[in-house]
Image 1 (cartoon, helix red, strand yellow):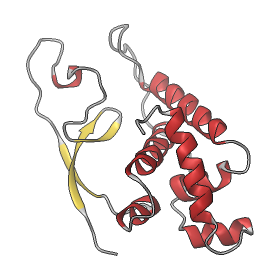
Image 2 (cartoon, one colour; image 1 turned 90 degrees about the vertical axis):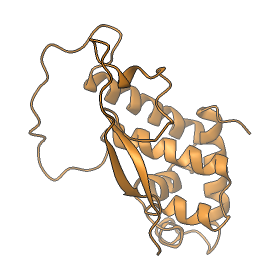
Image 3 (tube, helix red, strand yellow; image 1 turned 180 degrees about the vertical axis):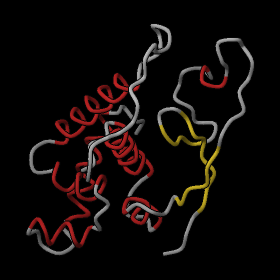
Image 4 (tube, one colour; image 1 turned 120 degrees about the horizontal axis):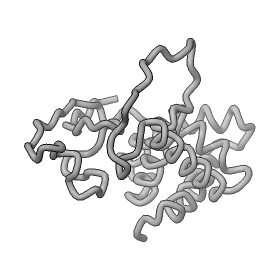
Length: 172
């Protein structure tokens, strides 16, 4: 598969599109003293997920693709991926102001959004969402693992992503 390298902004919540922000009004760019901090960017391969492959070939609309990427972002922010060992990151003491969320609170909020989106998709659709969007499986592998007929996964994934897009209130 051909790489599609793009620049993304590195924020405290993870990797965000440049200029997209989190809707906080640019608060992350200014420190407490009002001085502008230098923005850190990273180069990522946007063609790495199974959803981007489907989107690039016209099998997913922009709305469905955005819903899947939001779901995957919440899954990653909530740190729901399996771990091999214990987390050895230091505990942060003396967090920010009351308006800022601590990393633990952001993680809890992301998990709540993820759980809400999966619950909105409904029973039977959460399996294909998790396999394709979160675990990065291809549709043929997910269909085989779930015991579905060939080429049925695209239709079911589309239905699930439509419901997730409704949960995230993405414009139609």
